[in-house]
Length: 421
Length: 203
Image (cartoon, rainbow over the protein chains, first blue to last red):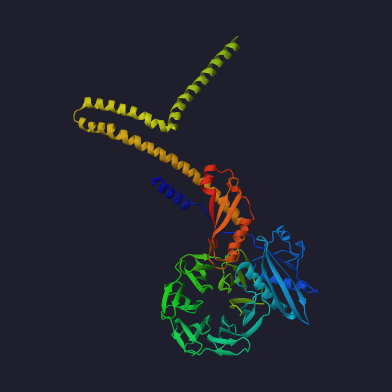
């Protein structure tokens, strides 16, 4: 009996001691994707598949297989052969076809295959006008992206930014995330700053110096109507719309000392949330609209703090580095992204709210204003090349970096829109 | 005549020189050989040491009566405690040392193999875009000594289908883990016959 028990003790020990090998890096190669030209009864088949390919490779997350290297051009499940793509080391294949039903109306059928698993992972169809092919291919791209990564696609989101084409000219612009379809919302000879999206994507809040002092305006994107927020203070800045669309957090100096205030959009009342004599600025909402991150120099250097709005309780978030600013939450509310500086070198970094460690992800030294994609996978930030400001971005795993098309003038303060519903 | 005489002297000189080298070498080599075999020395030399000590103690005994008491204690120490303790201690120490060096060697070889396997799987695993998700999935791998993957099973899912499938795709693309070939069979059986592979989204 004794030996029998001993045997079991020994067995349990051996089970406990089983070797565990951890794999966390993954390959440095990007996943290879082949978007086969779509088959159609018109000659326009390729135009849609090209648009889809451009979308999927926009943030450098995939490497596209050129059409010339493809061994076959399947258009449906029937004429698809996995081995044709395995030979080419392709990871995913997108194929499809479309038909023109009656004038202008098209119906597109598409398929996504995972080659290494030899599996059809998505089959879908969509109908629409041929003239709206850009929008249609963005919707298809989002669905394909979701089937491959499990994350929501952001190809139909928008971006707002400040354009500075010449010395005394400022424009506030909105464009599609790929830089197309740029619209100028407002132009001024005085500086414009800090654009922020309302979560229903109907309005934009920003700061304008048109009257000689910083003032917050809310502008309707469709009608173009502008409405200033009337406050007692002479210096208002950094407006941010809450995700529930009920409030606007902003910074106001009543007596020369900036503090965090919240403007209630329903009853138009203003409440004060910080009272420290240090500078409190750059508020950012948590996804549940219950907390705010902000930057304060109350400890002597700029650091990030978290404010619980119901109780006004304040907790310091960053401890390392002599400069931490411009923080915002990830969509899950657990991590934050920020500008982290040490000895005069500034990087974009991420940090878990609960741990002390800051993980720097960008390697250029003049990065500012990071904005996170609504799916939490991509960060776009403003950076400088000599004197010209432009927008650059990277994926969170650090595997790909990209720059957005250069505009005529310096671009600053990007703000990524929430998801379109 | 003179030439042959000089040759004779020369050869004697050379032979003497060689003989000298051999004897010097021999005398250097002997203690070295003893030093290498530390195991028997401690057991063998102990009684000699003890005898020497006894002789010395006897001499001291004769020399002074005052020191006698101390020496007696010493004798007792040597006779009773040291005999047992030293024997026991040195034996145990040696056993420990041998076991430790064996273990160290195994650990080193296992570590090297682990690093090689990590490199290999990292190079074939195409990690999907994950945002800031912090997830992991665990597989149990069964290997043959040839490195052939006999089976792989998902034992703990990450909850993310795409993530699990990316790991599965990596594992399905290889049929051999050749890194275990050449490993001592005992080490293989103890560590790599069946092991767990954990795919993590973050370091």
